[in-house]
Length: 108
Image (cartoon, rainbow, N blue to C red; front, top):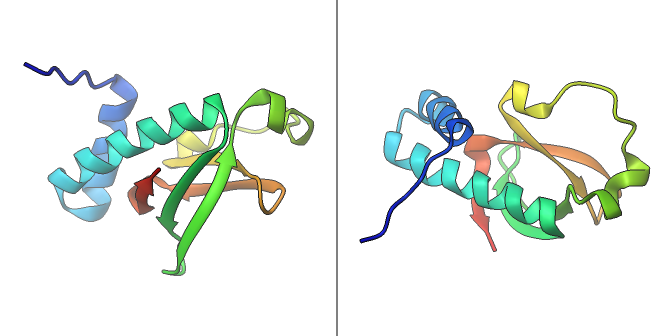
């Protein structure tokens, strides 16, 4: 038997996504994708696809790994999690970006 453990933050993400999409099944899947994405962002460069606010599809390569993003981090400001988004350093653009939780499509 497989067991799925959902953290408090993943449950919070699921609630936010469900409220925005009106779909609990989609919310669960996307919340788990965000959890996977955040782990990949921390450990190196993550490859993922999401839908931008303007509706266009964006394929991105990003990281939050300190060794890569340290020189672009000033340590000020508040967490993007407070705005129901996930921040990442975009390797291709050389700048910080964020995506709305419900916009995630795929994490490679």
